[in-house]
Image: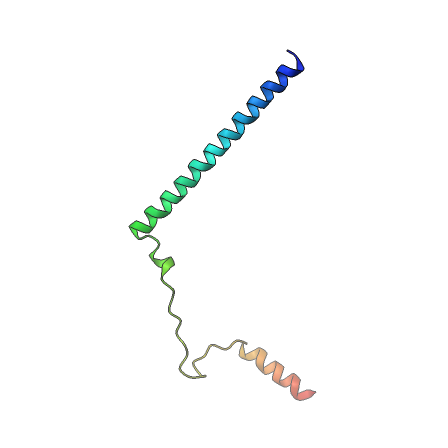
Length: 82
C-alpha cells in the first residue's frame, strides 16, 4: 500500500466519520425539539411558565429582616462606641 492510497483511505474515513457525527447531531436536535413540543402540548411545563406570586408585606413589622436581630444589635452597639 502506497502513501497515496493511505492518504486516500484516511480522507474517506475522515469524511465518513464527520458525516456520521453530523447526522447524529442533526437527529439529536430533532429529537430534543420534538420532546420540547410534546412537553409543551401535554402541559408539563405549566409550572415553569407561571411566575410565582410574590406577596409584598403590608407593614414594616411583617417585613422579613435582611439582617438577623442579633447582628443588627451588635452593629448598633459598635456604632454607639465610636
